[in-house]
Image (cartoon, rainbow, N blue to C red; front, side):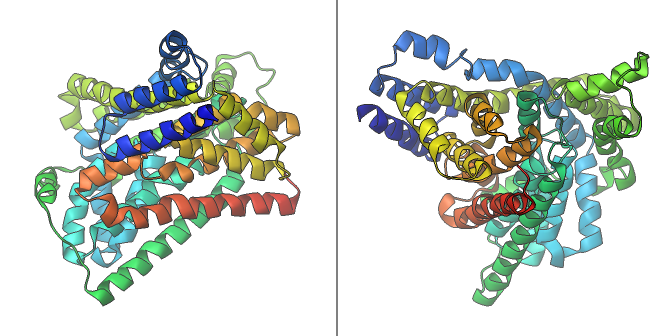
Length: 461
């Protein structure tokens, strides 16, 4: 009983401290200690093994995925410094117009994140541009936060095949699949997320116009707006999309070639390279991201002049997202050592549910506990995924359904991405979380359940 109360207390404390702005490293460690002390775990083992270096330790995760975070951050920095990301945003804005401000925000964020730019870079890049759009359209900021989150934090993060997102890579590296696993069902879920998400925010905007709610500027907006710079400095959009095309092309072309040509018995260098691309779900996307960053340096003179500085800043920018995610996983690593987590695993696996609904339940709950979709997915893959494979769930379907499920209940109030988005925009949970909950929790849950229902109707598992 005490152990279970300790688990609940640790989770409640983690949520409380995250909402109060306490550093996640400190919060996760303190909450891990609460869990350990109430569950009879030895402190030396907790602090020196379970939290940092166990199978789900913080630095076990950080070591495994360091390369991907590093290369993703460097590519994001290159796209931001060269103003290629801004160029793409401006081009879409000119094409769709201010009346389509919400659609602009969603499409630009979706395009950038699917192309390999990390979520935090996208949000930070888009918000200064969004201020002008929101002011002209008299759009409430809470709806801009929701629309950009639809694009950056839902379907491109977990559902669409081929993306070098951390969720796609975690699933592929754990299950031995590739980044395109379960692609068609992922596209089905993505259409639901994008369609319902945009319907929700557009409906919210219509209601806001009726009630007279509009854009309210604050001091944060004035500071962020200074980051826009001169629009004339941005490269043509046709050039700006080339680095993203290089990233996606590097990931997708080998898959296409393997589907066309049988290279299983070939011994030449080309065949070896194709086989390497299919068996390295961490290294190959990282190579693609580096090639994208180098492409920025080749085609944008402003980047070429400060290549070392940009790569160095990108490397620095990768550290905190990596460590913050790792810290959440370290907390989860302690939780998984408790009897309470074992009881949860036994309970969820013993439920009289179809296997895919059980996958949804377990992946969702674990992600909710740690407030991180990537952290929850990694814990799920290490602890529960083998049981579902034994039940007969195919690795490809498990890859995609677990990834989509992890991106629902993760976005509770203590989610780091939610907190960072609100911080960048200078708004509070009270002002904007209702809309964020609708598009990043409720709608992804609906999409995942709809995907599972379709699979069950088709008799696929």
